[in-house]
Image (tube, helix red, strand yellow):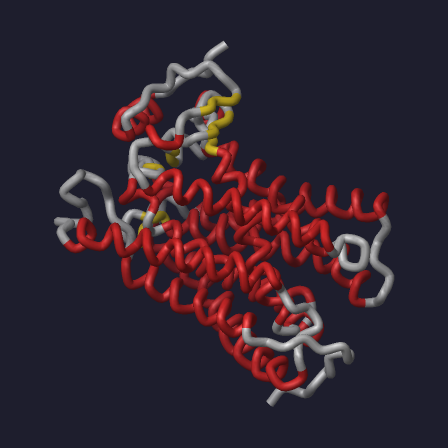
Length: 369
């Protein structure tokens, strides 16, 4: 039976060029017939990233199952956080409402409302952020909390490069009538970015390091059964932690001044903790070598940035011609300065970690100056 289609969803779907009359749980389309030529490109990028992350995780699963725990937990996190925003017949009458509508892609789920590439996005990018932070030795020197904050910050930057481009190219459209989607940077809701791209991945990283990473660091990696229940616990608790830390944002949704303060404080904590820690620990690791070299960062990190360089360059002419944040094609634009800062930080992180040499000696617990 087809899911109901509330007015907001129908309106936004019409803007993207499709209707909500699809009754299939899985829908396949020809990628060459999608609404914009960039759509199969970003789709393929995320699927390749998720596949590479899984391949690298499986290759080292016996000696270091942290990667597979991150991958599986990120996959569950993607479903747990994305589904409430997409089947509007379930959530349209709640406080969440219809937050956004994705365009139709080559592979979609839930009556065409959840693209496969969005599910693949989280394992691809959270693995990238976690490997960047882990390679610098932050978790060993600073512990799970600071390490998780750094993962959230790095992931927010990696995600921001993507998040500020999608609406302009009709990958999705935000529901501007929903108060939860304000305030915004360009057309991007700050609350969504902070909660889903910063706080949530930080929660995943914290739980994985506490339940799996510490065992690996101690030389006693969990076996198959132990890894299974630990990963299940992470998968259940990560969305819960994200929800708890996002409560101030939800409660202040109808009070813009309060919400600005709440979001500003959250971002300040992540930024002012992560930036100096990442710089200091990278400098130490550059001298002594990394215990966790990452081929994934060197391969997918570079591929991700190169792909988005091409996509952003293709979008810039329309962005430059936009009037009041709307292009000539009628699509809203993101915030270019924010996207540029995210791109530079992500680029420095990928380049910095790619330049680290591996070491076979235990990482020294240096006193940081």
